[in-house]
Length: 325
Ligand code: PBG
Ligand code: ZN
Image 1: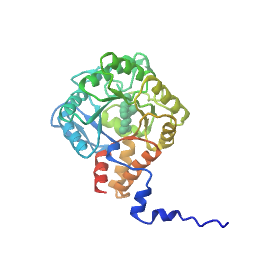
Image 2: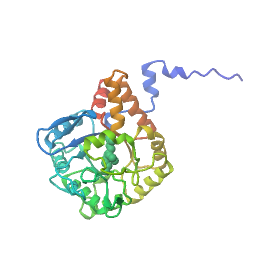
Image 3: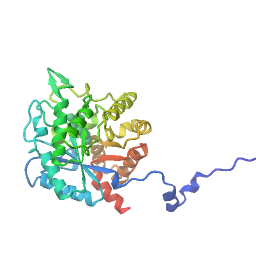
């Protein structure tokens, strides 16, 4: 028996054959588009650190949400910059804050568009941390009821999915119990299960005015060195009743995405974060890369690693590029 001469190139000979054997497909239906909302009306101001992304008043957020919906994107995630900040972050659960107002307006105008709300306190606390302070420590258990209250206010405004990003222990259970006690059994929890203490959040903190005023987030967000711990975090969220899991950031953590995918059956989201977006935009602005190809290749890599859902600032542009193809 002679060994046959194997030619993998046969499967690459034409666009048609390549289409036939393609293993992974990227689609606008995978995307969640982030919106940053501010108080007021008629406001649409580009965010310097995130070119192409805007601070929007609720009315303008609805317009952009409509564009996303029409481009085939099934969901938006809403982040807010509040009118006021205090020690507790009480504007986070104020029904009059921009996030709650935006959720109400989007659900009224576009009932089919899925609205995800980011549940955290860092944009709302005077100290910029995601939890309550006890001296200079971030106190876990006193934060839980405030996160639950915030999630409830989002559900009352009409959110379909709440997404806690604070990394306190036990928050998924606290939120689930609060939602259920108020009749919101059908509101899902997309947990930021595996969220690393990352330098890639830099542009977001400028966009959301949420940088910690002292210290850093390393006592609650994960150490970038750890992957086994990611499995443990995800398992806890599953046990507490999370409906979907998330890994964040995406690009430097695709090995973790693959491990979470292989270990759990829940839908898995990745967050292609602000720093990942800003790097691509900066290189593209300098003419150093082919932006469209880089973005589609990067997002495809996230899907190949095992993501079902991609939260990305590129969503609207990428959805339009995919339509052209
Ligand atoms: C708030 C939050 C952050 C991001 C999403 N929710 C920032 C942080 O934890 O400091 C980051 C998103 C991005 O960088 O695009 N907890
Ligand atoms: Zn936070």
